[in-house]
Amino acid sequence: MSTSEWRVAVGSDDTRAVYEPATSPSENAVFVCAHGAGGNMSDRAMLAAANTLRGHGFGVVRFNFLYKEKGSGRPDAMPKLMDTVAAVVDRVRTDLAPKTLIIGGRSMGGRAASMLAADGFDASGLLLLAYPLHPEGQPEKLRDAHLPRITMPVLCINGTRDGLCTPEIMMRVLQTVTAPWEMHWLDGADHSFHVLKSSGRNDAAVLAEVGDVSERWLPRVMSP
Image 1 (cartoon, rainbow, N blue to C red):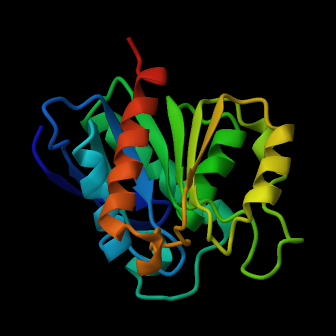
Image 2: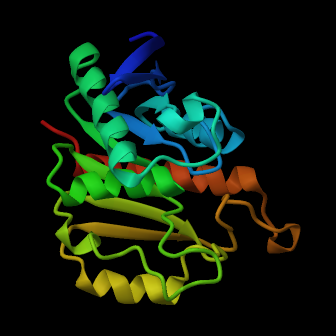
């Protein structure tokens, strides 16, 4: 497979998407990776995550949500975010026909994919990077009501210093989840997967951990 760029129709609008193949010896899945609320398909965090995963057996599809494609800073309503993810997945199935297709993404983008998963969306698994369980400083406003409805395998990777996902609260929430959910905590990392110098490691080491954990999880969701 080679890199592909598309215009993807979403209702009466359209947006950009790009597929980049795995750089590892084999590509075992295609990951449709949605960006966070303040980012875009080509921001530093998205590119870092995508390039890491491409080295661990994932082809990666990045795309812009409609508001970002139009140059707006205000995210679309959740139904439109979900429609955008679904439209990109449809294009991926048509053009790439992957045997194993993973949905998910960073922060808000992962949340939109998780809402699709809760509605019974057809995918092999859900990969969440920095899931935003609650707003910063507002742990009482949980974004968890839909999580018990998810049935597909999930890998959720968050930092222990993530202000949008308090570990103790997440572990309580997961007691209500019946899906095969693997929760991985990045020690000392914040919502951007950044670690302090005092932690004794750097951001590159955190990304390497993300890649290793994701690669180990992948065989559990691969289609025969």
